[in-house]
Length: 208
Image (cartoon, rainbow, N blue to C red; front, side):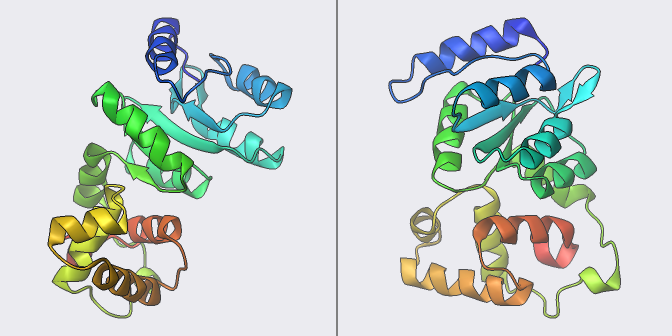
């Protein structure tokens, strides 16, 4: 869903060239998109944040209230920290920036469809650089170790445990142990919850 017709058509042609992807439709407004997902099952919606007179967050709110069970990936030219947090809290599975290589979008779609989060590295840098602590209650009870910070950054990038293990030259079981430590420190149970709470609680200690 994007309010620029040329971008919609270009993206549609790109994705139609992928053998395991099919396009259910293209939309320029929240109303059109809600009607489209009502007519037939849709696995994933690519949603622009800025839809001219509307914001993509409106679709997130309305789709959730209407029982939409598919994934939603924000595909946008840019979002501020507040918009990013709102999108993630509203049920988006990630943020993909339009200036990124097209092949990465295909990769992002596949990862989101398997339940992974996708955060474009540019969006991560913006969040880490500009995020502040909202209150003392949002601080973690214990600082993150260097290894935990490295794993957390890799999770932000959408890497799997196996990919993180390869990058850090660790066993996959070691990465799983670090992930459990992160879960324990943040009080969450899933990777997507970890990403969301980490974005909310981001401090220099977490991201250094």
